[in-house]
Amino acid sequence: MKNSLLLIVFASLALLSRGSAPAPVPESVSVSYDQPEKFTDFKSGRLSSESELKGLMDLFTAHLQQQAKRWLKDGEKLEIKFTDIDLAGAYEPWHGPQFDDIRIMKDIYPPRMQLAFRLLGADGKVISEGKRELSDLAYQSNLLMPASDAYRYDKNLLTEWLRREFARRPASAG
Image (tube, rainbow, N blue to C red; front, side):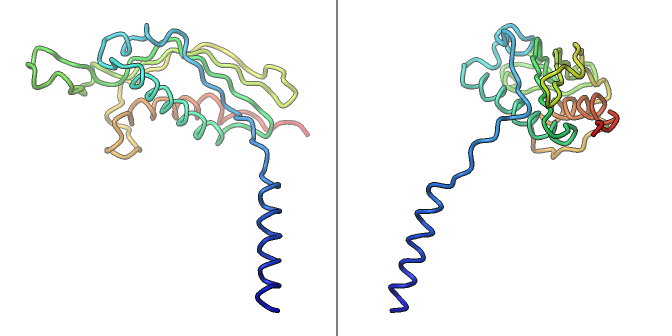
């Protein structure tokens, strides 16, 4: 009797859990890339395959979606469109073929990004918008991310922009 009662309870729970999956929540941060094949670092040929390019764009998109949520208020939506990306560091071919795939990090190769953004309120009205040219000339001295992250300087540039752009906004009325 106990076993059949437990079986009924588990079967009921399984049926309930299948039909009650939460609806997907729309992403509060959307990121797009305007002609990425023409971006400074993407056209260099170092990111030669489409999958490498897509992987890097997915990496930056996920980073922005995660980080921006810290600064957005309920119901707000942030739209970001990149128009150029120049990653931290550069390739120096004069070092010889053994250095072909090694990005050299020097102060003269800071990360640079150009983007346009729109911040929309819960009512869909534009709260703020603009174009930004981001750069961090001291990128090697102000690092908080793990050294194992190959794109830590670029991600840090984006995180700092989000903080500067959205952290000091006044509280919404209501």
